[in-house]
Image 1 (cartoon, rainbow, N blue to C red):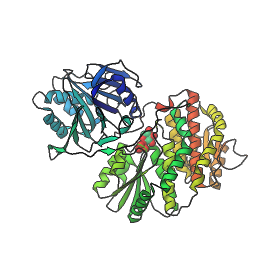
Image 2 (cartoon, helix red, strand yellow; image 1 turned 90 degrees about the vertical axis):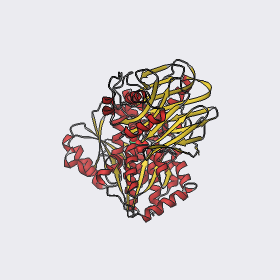
Image 3 (cartoon, rainbow, N blue to C red; image 1 turned 180 degrees about the vertical axis):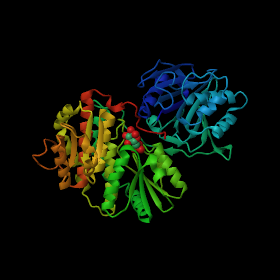
Length: 574
Ligand code: G6P
């Protein structure tokens, strides 16, 4: 969370050029934003990134915030500065011992509640008696937590960048250099990038850069490799009202692209992953949010193919898992930057586990940590809620299961996805009738249980309605007590007789059944029609029906949709 940028150029540029780059990082946080230039202009504002006062400059820092320490206020927005106003910095991460550091900075005047401001005062104090390298060294020694920091000192031609935990990359421009949380910030300007590794420090200016590594309590110079990166993505919503609906509409096309690439250029990667799976004693998926739900589906289809695997939520990984050098961890992550997943991988890599991943954003931290990585080819996803990336994760995981014999005809998938859109009119009507609800339950059995959970997550985060995705068979063990006259229950109904029994139990108590089904059955009062008869396409079609329903409920309610409250797309804190 939080996006940071620092740029130095041989030619003057405008403050709004930086703001445009920052806009490409807005998915990392949109509570507030701020900018400072070497010509003395500083602006900070609560809310979405907007154009600022034009200021020609040759160096600037910018930041978009997802609040962790301190409320969403102008004072807490970055850049932060010291008592003298000579040091400016932007930060992504959390300095977990900031209070301890703050207590030692006696006499300093703090104007925000953030952990970040402590860093500025730390450098103010340290630079009184040390040069920058010694101060940075001291910071690496004493700071705890995660940080990607870019710092500018008044009257100094350099920018200073430090990385521990949080992602940071350097883009090499024709007329200067740019530091950013990820390459998407500058991928329309250059294909040349350098990725910071753990505990690295860089001094950068318009003419060049030097890298150092904090190792053995010293800063040692390191040479860095330049990677050629290609990551375009689109910033346009085209004729759509929101990115969410645009991205849902892209699903047939991105699924087709993925299937083609798995058959061709990604085939060697898939073969390597197959070998790793065959050579492993234990296979564990690790993921968060929607990616975890995709992993649960992947586990189901792999199990069907005779491969034993488990899926574990990343933030709880260390509490559940015994991992050794015979373990294969498969990370599933859209962004490739989720801190909980990275933490789980780091810990387990140290134990000798092998790492594989399915990632959407290329060159991301998780992809770079992996022995083998499959790209899910969904393209840039801008809406905070995962839609097309979820679908492609499921396609990729099922394709992996098919390598082990879970045979499926992938050629029909794009058309089966298109079929869901024939239900859009009906879904809009349903959305109107659901917008005033306080609770919605979603039930599914077997492979439709992860789908039920995914639909519930979407309804919560986008439509702001409490929703619970459950195993159909579990309802009678407690939750049935909450079913009253008219309580809406979305039932994912394929050909299992047991789910019909669950539906009848709900109906008997006055519950309102909305069936997502491929069956004609007059007992369902309301339904969304699924064309697929096989499990894999059914799971995808039902998920998309849930995405559309969620979108139209939120639209009916006039909610922000693409940038929902309190969340961010890339969660780079623990
Ligand atoms: C955040 C996003 C979710 C996403 C989750 C995992 O919470 O809002 O949409 O599913 O992170 O992200 P990842 O990038 O690892 O898939």
